[in-house]
Image (tube, rainbow over all chains, first blue to last red; front, side, top):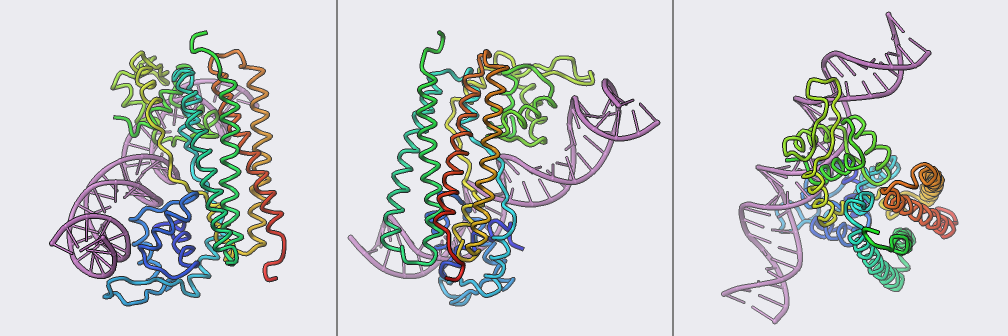
Length: 181
Length: 181
DNA sequence: CCCAACATGTAATCTGTTACATGATTGC
DNA sequence: GCAATCATGTAACAGATTACATGTTGGG
């Protein structure tokens, strides 16, 4: 039915927050889930059509209206519960930074250090961003029933960023010295 | 030429460690790079053929031998250096655990706690594994020129695992209480 | 009136995985 | 002799991205 149960999960999940248009759903997935999830544009529309056909979402405003709002149905909520309970599919790891560092002898110490400094700086920036979002969300939406769960995902980002910074610092200390000593 | 420059990088990188057969290369990618990189079987052979045609690897033992050992050439090493210096392609994030937790209100607190305990335990196991590999590698290959760089990737795993454990613990503390309070 | 943002969709393509297919070597 | 491992490859498929294609609405 839907392209993949993964996309289905994200789409139904988004609509479980509140009914919205396909366009708004895409923005929610990009802007709200974006730190740990992504769906490409071309997946969302076909998945919504499939979900509508299966009765898991209801299209409000009719097909001839300029924009249609999708809402999750009772069967859609049940489907979402099933999907969320499915075993987690870990994506194959593909960490370009670690691949480059692993072959650091070929790349050279200087370039490795540059990569590490860059990674550290980006992690630091991201950390600030997460902390800002967390503060903002706590102030504006701290009362919502979904908030405690959204908070967990932000905490994850914060912990991972702190670890990245600490790791990069440690590596930079260890990697001191010349390319050709 | 090669399926993707990413695969090319991993293949040339593997051969930069030492010449080996395609089969051995696959095992190195799976067992040594496995914690941060993956290549599927079906990519390695075509990429090797393309690299051979381009003169970046040399096939030793001839095409009619039962098994052929591939070695990286001077142009291959140059190509690897170029690839390693290319900007890092970050994969689209797809963290199934965080997606499930984000929709934790639908999934239920109990199941969220189960997911977190599981994640914590797996991170702990992995941490032990990384520490074991690091100790072993330090003892047996600590003198190799590639060792300091390999070490960095293990340190990354160790830091990330510790962060995951701490995060999961924090979440479990926060997520105490009943599903329907 | 024009531009940015809203809105919906399709088709081609790329990338990567899995399943299939085959055969040699080596230790038990 | 037989099973496991070493070894090499291809083809079909699945999943996802990108580019294309089109039209509306609202503000400056």
